[in-house]
Image (cartoon, rainbow, N blue to C red; front, side, top):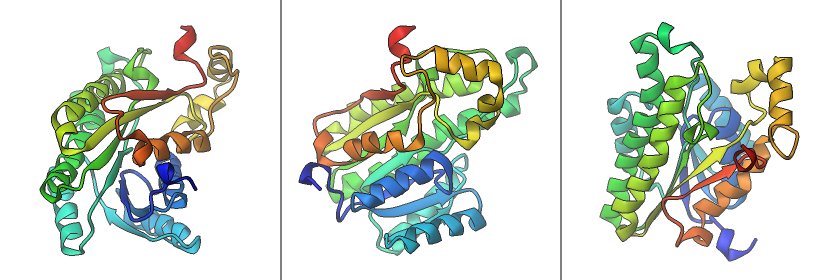
Length: 255
């Protein structure tokens, strides 16, 4: 592996990583040499994910964290401090979806989506950055944006608002923390074949729309995001800060 993409000796925390895209990011960074910290809401799927990566020879541990709850985040970082774990890379991946017309949307459902995506990204990043700055170690943040960071669609208003907020939060992180050799960037996945999108994939009309609305004429695959995640985690991106890289098959290019 070229040294520009070598993550040996680095430790990466990926939120929402027991399955789906989060697990793919974790496995990808592990293959580049990083030590991995998985986090998720529930212990059982977290243990299964940890064991899968350990079976491949990767160094991995796991923490149960609800990123919508500040006290859980603080407690997890305090545990990592106690365990001598220093986080060098954070991928803020945890997320949910809630589809409903805005006029029918209850505040609690709006708040849960925004809390997990936007507020959770802020809280996890704040705790990690405090420690990076104190150690003078530098660091990397990769926030997960979306096509809805740029364009809206009906029935996903809280997700769209949160993902737009993450785009600007990424820029704020770059503005404040760049002086400490910390880079904050984001990945904006297009329509990817994941569990979260299962209902959309099975919807023939939506499936046809996805395939006909971008130049590649297909859904993206989870593994097609890994290269960008490694790039933004490694020294190859040391002078890239506050940017969003859209991995969308050209979807935004042709709107």
